[in-house]
Image (cartoon, helix red, strand yellow):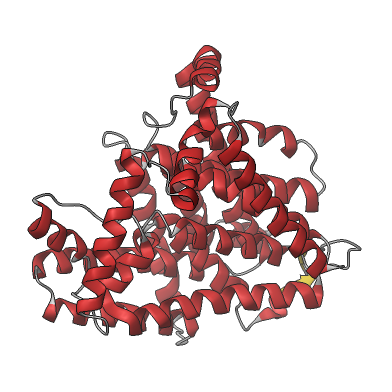
Length: 413
């Protein structure tokens, strides 16, 4: 009994608890200048206690996550030497270093499937708290008005596009728990996040929902995978067709319809889309001038400032990496991302274990998200990478895969 109590109050478990609290508060406090210190406090305590536990163990193995971090961080740090503005590049590397510490904290905090599930549920709880807070903030009347008039919600919580993305992540984690852990009440929990995906007005969040929901159900059953993939593409194309041709769209889909019309029919884009497309074209032009090693870490904004008189980031991870680090880094980075997705999909097709569905879906979600966000500075992306590395740990003897007819979950031995 004493051993159990001692284990439950170990320094490492304390670190895991504060890490969970940190992750849960990110959804609301991360964009709040006055309350952000709460998240930072939880992170500092979690990191400090984790470091103490790590020192106490007196053992270190250089594993794939350490190689991953070392490779990408060293390249980014060395790029300071040829950066146009070295101060901006140095500042970006400080941010990158902090994010890599977050990745390692998550990775080293996971010893078993209970730990993994705790972090996943912490992400879900954070998203639900964000949804409840938004519901209280806007009220039922505000939500109804947003549905009818098409104005965007979420700006007062964090930022509309991030609000939509967080809602999408929350929705799919809740759907996963409802379907594979047989917890039907989660279908009720995900109603608010589903609504806020659309009311955020975030085009990427809506497209993530439209694309990833069919993928989720395709992964749910391994039979007739090619037929289901064809059905998926037909569904997406049919949705795009209806969105572009319907004259009676709900107001909250108007921004998406304008974007699709401009992309596929050379229609008139809204100001936001026009600016972002011009920024992508400018980034491609910069890349052509220095294709191999780029201009250095986070230099897109500096060159945009020199050409157009204002500082702007590209809001596109593909362009940001090409401009900052060039083609070699870009290929290595996204080859690694695609390798993760391929391995997860392969493991799921071979085994049918549902945990691989969730992580495959999250990787697809972030790949889509990269078209409008710089995920190389996105905290949630590094949290999921840490979880993914933990899932791929070589010491798999700590896990037991339960035999279930559909999907199958992972349970502790």
